[in-house]
Image (cartoon, rainbow, N blue to C red; front, side, top):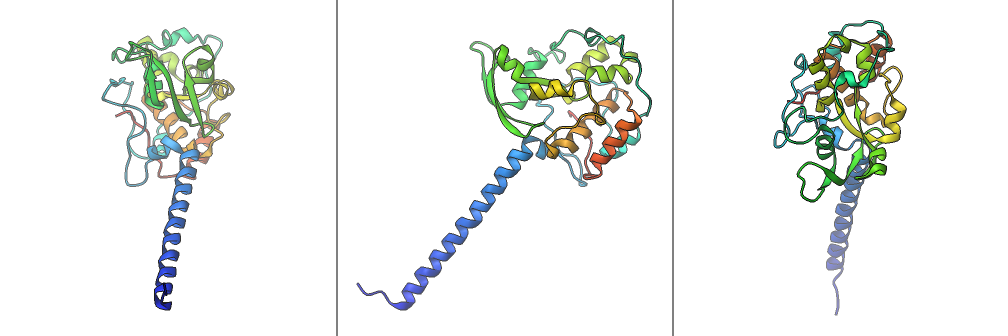
Length: 265
């Protein structure tokens, strides 16, 4: 069969167009993968100057709000930071975890304890223990502090590998105003989804009671959200920051001055 030169050129042109489309699709896919592995679920929670977007904090379908001492200030995190008092640390020698109530209570009265609430919120492909609508047996998630995928399997090993981090550590909160809160308010602080993120267990251990001046996530793409979340928690519960902590927060927010505060509403 004889093929004309014009037909041949049309076929070549269509072939080049097809390869061009495939190349663009491949680049887009790689870009999406890069975004997911470096920012993941928290990238969608980073608001811009146009206003706040919903952070991965609260799902009204099955969670009930925990009422803080004060509403989270609206507006930028930098503006909210300027409204937080700057003081030195109070004594830590009288700190006791029990001052914040028994760990992982059902503070929001939705029938599930806080740890399982946060696992359900932060994990994907969640599987519950047979016969339970609360107790998470397995799932996977994009760990925010390291920026990598992790699997969770219920059990002692899984509980060590995946922990629920207090964004503002309770010991830090104790030294910066929480001693003046009531027992009920401290219990809410310890169980408020705004202050809780599923995270790598060893990294959570390394963080300890560190504030922004001594510890920040290795995954830099989460730092703006992380610092904004700390500011939001401290503003909501009337806690203060140290001078060094405020300086560290301002340095982080310097790269994202339009970062808004984070709210559970």
